[in-house]
Length: 156
Image (tube, rainbow, N blue to C red; front, side, top):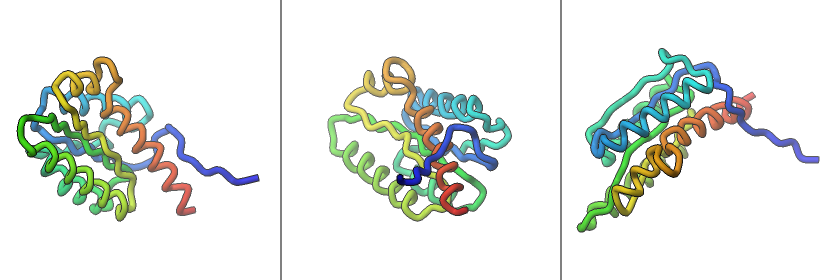
């Protein structure tokens, strides 16, 4: 019989970083509130959560990379919102932030999760920030807790 190893949803010892873009703040502030609430509800002390704000989603990758590489955190949560407009700008930003955070995830020693919304319109973003489809910031925070616990089990 195989030996299954998985994370659990009780907060591990250690600090969490939440990196959030200010652009589209009417959405990202809701993602941030959901992420912080989820961390606290799962046992992370308020004082063990650092929030890093950056100008926009494009800049998020650099902030996430620095937080993850600092050695201070067991988990880093990336939050942002890109809404499609009438130009190709959406494609560049959405693709690069996904690729950038993905690269950080591959090399980081801590858990890194992706809570960046890439939506076709404002309604989709509102729905994913807590109205109809849950709060994707909370989902990313919960995933960070579970992943941090899994990583801790893998090094023992």
